[in-house]
Image 1: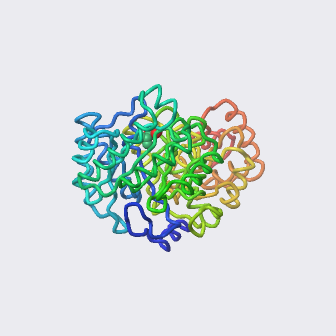
Image 2: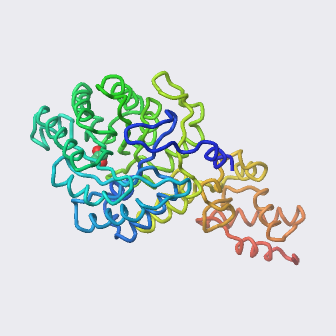
Image 3: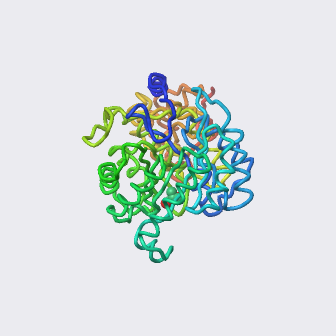
Length: 434
Ligand code: KIV
């Protein structure tokens, strides 16, 4: 497909902590196994986590955040197993994914995270501390200067363990004072942080505010040219994908997301939405005076693995997607109204901006959810076409009679009519012999 052609032409640049050799390349950091697992009730076993991690690697994710190792012995073991196995396997384009473990900004957490990830070829420690006034005063009970000291000590300690790939997150950055962020982020860069992840922890920002924040940080944090800026957007106002893209427009080159958008509360930016937005619109659409490259952004994600990975995550976490979920919802490639079905029969691009096949969904497979649903809004053309596919070449009068009956039945039948229903309608028409 057009999309896989695009990926073939643009190979993933070499992985270097804190630097991306091509300024148009956007790293995808998947946190399904950490923030995603923080969705209420979404607990995963170690073997489920390992299987999902393998799929994430096949999908082409650059960095897999495998868990929060201090949280429990199970989480430690799961992260360690993923680091030891997936973090040592070479995937499709010759890439070995980075395996990250989360830790609060203290030595005990960091040592535990390092023990869990250090078996990977590319281990990363991700450490964080809150920087908004509300979090520093009400949650941490610390002054801004104390918070800077803790952050610097944490990054220095991670470095002293031998870790050269260190991500620092100022939690609740979306509600933090930018001047304070300039100070603390400048200090953690000096201490050795290589990725600065900017979380909109409460999903509070509008896309233009979040984009502006990324721009301000790139312009004002001392040493900002030595690190990669990252976004981590929660979805409390349904803006996580838009905010992540606004971050990319302003120079963020790592986007954190989860499969199906799962995560704390209303969830995170959804990987499939972010990646398909960049695949379809990244070319030329991201030209901005503050964007470092040509504006033709791309990722290394191979979208044909989106559907299988989405289904696996839904199955193992027990968190089914709503039917109208963008890209992976059961209705995302379904067409019910007569006008839409007529358009689809004539040319699929009348109502689809990407093909289901490009995201690994087979058209016409009713289990997979791609295709035309024959329901009360459907038109004669769609019903006639399906009947012809089933072998019923009706003349105009018979088709009219079947269609009139179809409309009566479809009025009452939720979920549409299937092929058996259609065949019964045909055989109800007196005298018809196939
Ligand atoms: O939402 C958040 O702030 C986080 C950080 C730890 C990145 O999950």
